[in-house]
Length: 269
Image 1 (cartoon, rainbow, N blue to C red):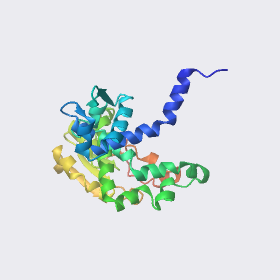
Image 2: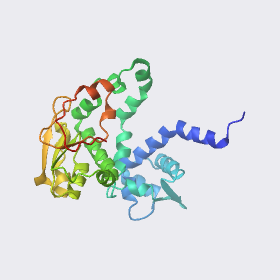
Image 3: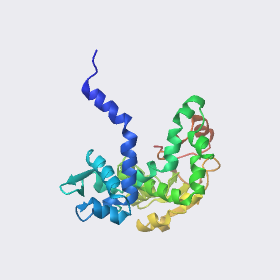
Image 4: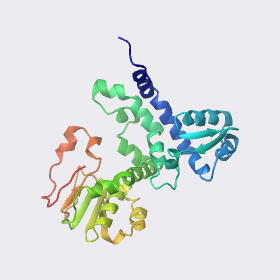
């Protein structure tokens, strides 16, 4: 039986997906979208602005134009598309930070060892990096900044929908466990002005939360606590939110800590 042509096309899209991801990371890292903010520019202009090799940069930009991330115009001119508008640093949801995160060398190295994990059940990141992914970012502050920016963008993309999906009106104190720099908690507290918040994450993560909370005008309503939720959970809240946290761990550590205080309005995402 012959395979439908569209099925083969879909398969090849998956097979070569890493190439597009890497190209997207390069464009995000170089800030190409910001350079095209005011209109089309030639590849030679872009190469000069980014101190890159023009012919090679052109190949990468053409590849992304082929999948509608950019638009190629006559004269080797490049322009933004609705997709690449999200790569701008001033976008409402700056997805360029996510493109940078998932294209980092250490991320690629860890995913490159996926077969090792499948065969052994061990962490690919620990196998390749020598430490778990959280310790690696703690030891590399520049990578932690990129991670925090990416998580902020991810939270902004869904925060309003997620905050509206649950009635926090009966909650006086809401704790966001593993809440990053506070984007989701800020969204919830803006919707419920009578509530206070506790932002809890690793110390080097919440250390970057100040600007996010300041911009939201919520500094006085949020208590920031740093630590590991495997060791302790902040007391005093009547709602505990965990957004995209449990999937980071295997079952054993994910269920090991089951001492959360009795809740009046529990929620987990």
